[in-house]
Image 1 (cartoon, rainbow, N blue to C red):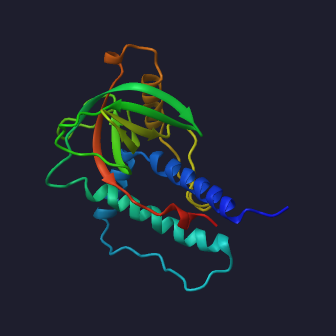
Image 2: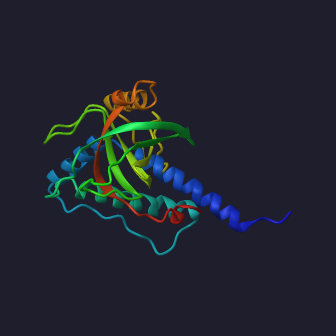
Length: 217
């Protein structure tokens, strides 16, 4: 039987893209900010990972390359944290919610006259409580914009408790408060409450545009 290499490559890229989103959407924004503060306080220039010219095998390549790629995404998220023009926190209604491939897919309201336009791959912080000043919500999670449909935004979230590790050598784990935060978000967006009771607040934190085909072997 002939192997359809094109289809096989598409499946590999789709799998890599799914894993990529699970890792990033599963990050704890509050924890990222704390880690960044700790790194900033250290009196060191920091060591950059050495990118080798040759690799023993595919696993060796990904063990080196993937962490660098995710560090780049983290930097994109954190560099906007202290931006002069802070993103505006918007209240949105959850119109629909479904599940696919362990993700939650949301349709939330979007107004055309909003000052801040949103586009595919924009990363949002979605929360139950409104973000005001330096206050931080207790229930939150990342969501990525998939597309805009007229007056609706289609968002993707990953609210599972288990952590998808970047490499076999990483041992990232979630804190109990963040697990509870994800549980609260999941309960709200999947509830049968009225639309007015299914309110969330969104804050644009970054936009990443990474070619996930580079993550497939």
